[in-house]
Image (cartoon, rainbow, N blue to C red):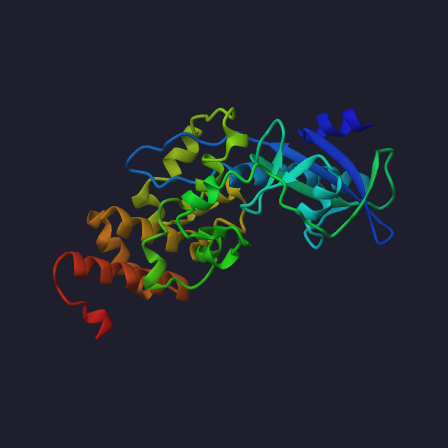
Amino acid sequence: MEEEILKRLGAFYACQVVREGKYYLLTAHSYQPFSDFPANCIKIDAYYPASNMAYMTCRNFAGEIGGRVVNDIPYKEAAFSTGEFLWGRNDLLIHKRFGSYFVLKMIELKEALKLPEVLFKESKKINCFLCGLCAEMCPGKAIDVNGFKRSSCLRDMADRMPEYASFSLLGGSLLGCEVCRSCCPYNAEITRVHPPEDLVNLMDMRRILIFDKQTREKLAAIIGSNMARASVLLPAAIAGVCRRGAWEHIGLVERLLEHGSGKVREAARLCMRCYEESMGRDSILFE
C-alpha cells in the first residue's frame, strides 16, 4: 500500500504517524528550486507552487478516504520522529537525497492504513553538518550558535507590518528567501530548473503592482488563494521597487498609499520615503 500511496500522491516518503490515539498520514514531496527570473520580474520561491500542488493532491486523496488535510500538528516534529530526516541549524528539515527542497503534508485519517507506524515525538535536535554557512549567509542574521531566531528571518519579517529598519532586506523575492537553502551543502546536488512560462509572465513587476483580478486568480491557481492576496504579495513587491531603485514604478507605488490593506499602505509609505531620500528630497509623508 505504501508504494501505491507514494505514486498516487507524487511523494517520495509516506508513513503513518500516531499521536494521542489519532492516525495521520505524513507525506514528503520533493521539488526543484527555480533558476533566475528575467530582470523585469520579481522572483518567487519554488516552494510555494510545490506546496500548493501537494496540498491539492492530498486534499483530493483525503476526500476519497474520508480524511482531511490538517495543519494543527507540528509537521517537522512528526517527520523528525521518523528518523528519516535531519534537523538543520536554519530550522529546516533535511533529507539525505532531496536536501531541504521538499514539502510536508499531513492527513488526519478516519481509520488506520496498512502503513508503517511512527509514534509522534515533540522534540528536535540539530544534527546537520553544523558547517555554519547558513548562519554566515543569512541576510537577517536569524541563525547563530544559539539556534534560529524566527523573528529575524525574512519569511517572518514579510508576515509583519513593514518597518523602515528592515525594509531594505525585503523585496528580493515575492515570497520566501532561499539564501540558507542555496548555500547548504546538503543541497549541492539539487538541480535548478527554469520557472514555468506562465509563472514568469505573472511575476512581471508592473503586473504584480497593478495586481488586477486576472493576475490574482491566475496566481491563486499556482500558489493557492491564501497566498495570492494583496496583503501578502504587494508589500514584498513594493520593497522590491525600493531595493532595486526601480523608480519607473513609483507612480504605481504612490497609488497604493490609498490601498485597503494597512500593510500595503505602510509598505508604499516606506518606499516613497526611500524614493524621496534617493532624490535628495525630504519626504512630505514623514513630516
